[in-house]
Amino acid sequence: MKQLVLILHIYHNNEEQKRKDEERTETLKLHDLCVIRFRNEEVEHDIDEVLNIIKNKIEELKLGSSFK
Image (cartoon, rainbow, N blue to C red; front, side, top):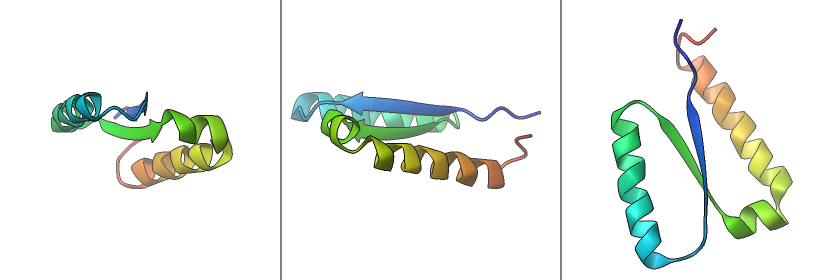
């Protein structure tokens, strides 16, 4: 049975860190890991939208795999 793996990354708006995070995300994708990135402000001020995005991504991943 294939596992569903979703990585959530919450970050601050820092250009240097953003570049490093994007590189890390690309490396994780090479290992078939899904990464969703949210700005800290999104989580603090619009948690309902963040949760909807996470739920939708989980459903998308379930539909696209043999996850049971």
